[in-house]
Structure formats: structure tokens, C-alpha cells
Length: 275
Image 1 (cartoon, rainbow, N blue to C red):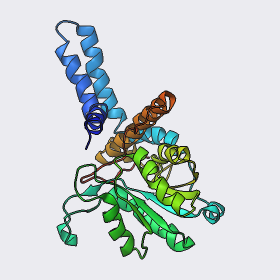
Image 2 (image 1 turned 45 degrees about the horizontal axis):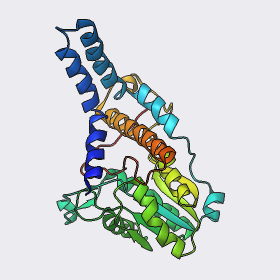
Image 3 (image 1 turned 120 degrees about the horizontal axis):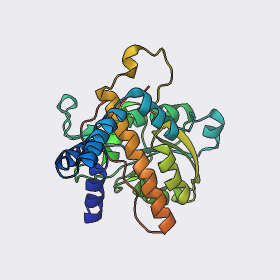
């Protein structure tokens, strides 16, 4: 891992829940004696932010802004020449499967949907995911999972560290096979950023979103309005993608050659549901 990648990850963690609300609250408490008004404002801002990123209504609204792509259509799939599935992390201990690593829940959701599309269309599949933490590349774990769904990927991109790399390093493999139009599989909240990276490489991209965090008004109950751990994870993911989009826009405006905040999440993860 490069120092830039590590620095980017540390900054990303500090600017996202749960640390961001805690930083604000702690700073406010430290300032209470010297600047009581500012201290109280910061402390309460941390509390309010913590509630906003774990409450279904606010997280659902934010997710709705990101998850603008509808499900991929049959017409789009007929135009596509390949399916590209992006990794989202892996777990480093899967003893129940007899493996030292396996796809995590995020990647599994993408693999499951990508395999479904591959079986429906017969299109070749590219799995993209490197080893951000230095363990087994995520694309290899994706290959195993895809094969369990009856799909053998044609290409494995194993060097990427983030979404920018996913597109940059997958592009030569696809071009060598004459592929210019792809169905891109990822989380609905991640696709706006991922699509932009692949389009920057010259591809026509048909978004194939899965795992929407915003569930819509599906029989809302009282408890759907209360903060929860699963919604807090969705809030983290949505804020992560919002920051990633901002970093991507700044990079593209500046014309610099470097990745936006990556979509890697190695380790265990929780289901995320925002209503």
C-alpha cells in the first residue's frame, strides 16, 4: 500500500461516522470552559449528526439522492458486451467455508446479482478487486463465489485499490477483447461514482445497481423511524459515497492522476437498511 492510499483511508475514517460525531462532541466539551457557546454548539452538533446518520428518515433521504439509477433494463443488457462486477471488501476469516478469506456481505450482494445477469444474458464477466490490506485479492474470492452461482468469470482484475483503479486497470482487459459497452454492477449508492470512472476510460456504461439502502415506503411502522445499528451502517456508507463523489469531482476538475476515495471495505460488515 502506498502512503497516499493509507493517508486517504485515515482521512476518510476521520470524516465519517462514528468518529466524526465523536470529534465534534469531544471538541465541544473541551471548549466548554473557555468558549461555552461554541463548545455547546459543537457538542450538540455532534449529537445531532450522530442521530441524523443513524435515523431511517434522514439516511433514506440522503440515499435517495445517490441511488438515482433504476434497475438495468433488458434493452440495455442486449446492448452490453460484458458484465463488470466491482468488489466491496472481504472477510479475512471464514472457517465455516474452510477458507482463510471470502467475500464480505457487500461483495456477495454484488456477485449474486452479477451472476444472475450473467446467467440471463450469457455475457462474459469481469471481477475487479485487488488487495488493499495486503491479503488475497478480492477478485479471487469473487471468482470462488461466482463459481458457486454457476458462473466462471472470463477476466480477473486483481491489482486495484479503489474505484479509480477498478476502471483504470480493467480497461485494458476489456479493450483487448473489443468490449466498449458494459453493464456495471455495484451498490446503487456507489454506481454514480463508479460509472463516472468507467466512462472516463471511454466505455459506454449501463448501470446495474443492487442493494438499495433506500427501501421506500414499504409498510412503514413506528420502529422504522427510530435510530438503529443497521441504519447507522447505511448512514456511514451514504456519507462515504458522498465524500467519494466530492473527492472525484475535485480530482477531475484538477486533472490529477489519482483515485477518489476507494470503495474497499475489507473485514466484517453489517446489513444496512435505510427506509
